[in-house]
Image (cartoon, rainbow, N blue to C red):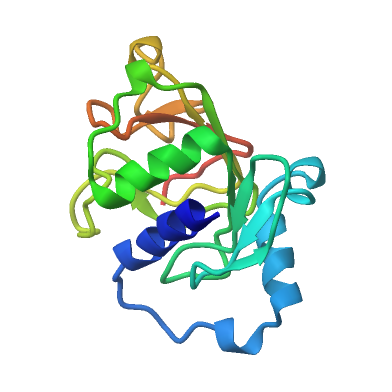
Length: 183
């Protein structure tokens, strides 16, 4: 559990974006657990470990999944539930250490509430005037070898699954669960 807490703390320290005041202080532990659980189907989230936006373990789980209420600056609005492969990916991402998709296992992440806007091409771009930005609605994210992604588009508005962060260690497949409209 200490490893998961460290990963989540790193996640929350990575996104130093300007934001409005969070409603985190106004929410109860139960509210935050409910938000985190909303990221995945109940058969995944009800037995998952739940971590708060401050990295604390709010509830121990027993199914290998970890759910969190979101990442700053939107601490309680973009929840996600990740399997063990995604936990490893998140750790590498936050530490900006190499992650070789060809040598790792299949991973699945749920974000059934959607996500904040991010550059589809460069995972570390924070300048919204540059890049190919997407604010995806409800979706799944898949980790698999990049060599298996060659036939998928990188355009998030093409319809269907697409590759995010192509050519980067943190490449993965996005699977939108509703139509993604171009802004």
